[in-house]
Structure formats: structure tokens, C-alpha cells
Image (tube, rainbow, N blue to C red; front, side):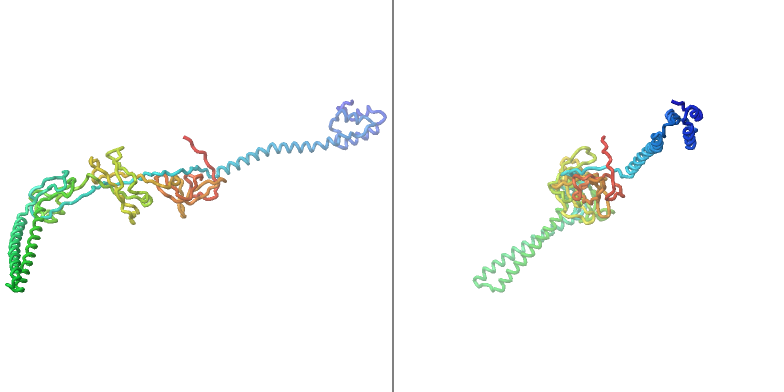
Length: 438
């Protein structure tokens, strides 16, 4: 094998008998631009061999070099571009995820059958009355003061009316005179009727005697009515309690001049002598909103609570209602009666009324934070099976405070968006956030 490092001239000297062919072959190689590069051993051997021709594998090897370079370039491109494509796809996915609205959902639950409605109420006495003087005179003395428990018919005060007593005595005397005149006229009329039977007197005279008796009868009845009237006024000299209760006001003192229905000479006085309230049974009036009014019946459970008795439930019952909605307040006036024999509650006190409203057809329950108030009505947003928002118009039933009852427009399987934004629209893609577990 020839040394590839030898110059072309050395190859020529070593070749015998084929100098011309070797010279021509060397010249062709120099023209091809390969004389400056060292030749391999095989190439030198073929160049020195005068009987050999051009190697057929040289040209195909030269043709493989562009393909190898192209493959290398493609590999470099793949190494540089593929990571960028992955990064771009990841960026696009992250951008879409960030642009998608993240929401939390709640599931509708069954509304409670019994709902407690808490309303403020004012305690009032079962009965109360302002007591006035029915007879004019001076107050002789009073027997009861404020806070006194009295019974029906018990004397509260006494009025002195000597002129009224004199009038009564005169009326009774007139009654006695009328009675005597009637008795005489009656006897006379009977006597003349007996004589008429024997034709001893005329019919005309007998009729006159009978008429006189009837006139005396009428005068007697008038005198008796006058006596009854004055006797009734005299009875009002004793001021009595109309029912069992407690005296809450005394506006008169001994020596005060009182008249029927007023107190002359006392500035600022309305004429009321005493005020009495019946507190054995108390009334509590509450105004039930229109939406809850249909659930209030005499069978509705109710109890009272008061700030001065923390933790205590005072038994009560629904007594009656007006049966109509007040057009001004849109409420139903309901009366609740409570037994107050122990005197725990006082008339005029503030209390809280707890009404146990019973519903025969409870619907679904949602928090108020899931509601949207749109021009077409109350709306809720749900997530459909494709992950898109869907707005539904619903109707509200009972109000539980932080929760409401949804009567129509919602299914128990709906995924309702909690705290939806006002800009949320139907068809908008949303992403459900995982539930937070405490």
C-alpha cells in the first residue's frame, strides 16, 4: 500500500510502464481540486495501479454528505423548535385557564318543613279601662293607689254629692204622691164601673173616671223612672273596678271637684280618675309578612322570649287574626295570648315572638348569596354538563334569613354557582373550584 502522505511526484516515479496514464490521472485529479488534500491508502493504490479504473463507491459516498448534513440540520431544528412548541402550547393552555372564570358551586337541599319566624311584639293587657266620674261632686276619699290588685266591683273611691242625694229624696216623695193619686183614681174607677152595671151612673162619667186612673198610672211610672235615674246617679258616688286587674294610674286626690266625664278647675287633666289593666292574661300583637301569612293558623306553635329572662321560653298560643292583609304595611295582624298568672311579663314590655310555621309542601333551599336580581326576575346561575353557565329564573317561597326557599325553576341535581358576578352570562365557560374542606 502506498503512503498517502507522499506527493504525486513520488507516485509517478514508483509506477513503471504506465507513466503516461498515471500522469493523465494525476492531472485530472488536480483539475478536480483534490490534489491539495491527502489521499487515503485505497485511493493511492488505485492511482498507482495503471490497470485499474475509477472506484465506483467514491461518487455515492460523496452524494451521502448532503443528506447527512440535511439530517443533522433537521435534528438541530427539532432539538431547538420542539421545546418551543411545547412551551407555546403550555402558555396557551395556561392563558385559557386564567381567562376562564373560576366558580364555586352549591347543591340545592330540601327546605325545612318547619320554619321559625321571629317577630317583635309589644305586650298589651288583655283589657284596660280609664275610669271617669259619672256623678258630679267632691272626692271624699280614695281606697286604692297605683299598683293595687283589685277585684271586680271593689270600691276605688267615694264621691260626696249632697245635692244629688236631696234630688233623690224629692223624687221618691213625688213617687209616693203619684202612687197615692193612682191608688185613689183606681178605686174610684172601679166603683163607677160597678155602679154602671146597675145603671146608677152614666157611661160618660164612668169613662172619665177610668181615664183619670190611667193618667195617674202614667204619672206614677214617670215618678218611678225619675227615682231610678237619680238612684243610679247616687250609686255612681262609689267608683268601682269594672274587672279584676291592677291600678296603673290615680289622677285625683281627696277634696277634688269632679264632674261627670271631666275634672273642672284642674289644668291638664283629662278627667280620668283611675286607670286599670287586666294582666292575668296578656295580648301580644305581631304583624306577619304577607309571604308567611298563609302559614299562620290557630294551630301554629308559638312561644315568647324576653331579654330579662334569657333562655326562658314563655308558652303562648295564637288566639286570632284579622284575616286580611293591611294594604299599607302588607302584613297580617295576629294576636297571641299568654297566661301571665305569675306576673312574669308586664303590659307595655317588648318581647320576641317565635312562630313555628308549618309547610305541607317544602321545596328546595338555597343561600341568598346564590341569587341574581335581574330585570326579568330573580335568577340563579347553574353549570351545565359542558361546563358552561346557564341562567334560570326562579320563584322565592319562604324567607329563612340567610337562606330562601326556591319553589319553581330549579332542580335538585343542579350545580348552582355561589356568589355569581353580575357580568355572568348564559354560555360562558366556567371552571369549578374544588370544595374547601375544613
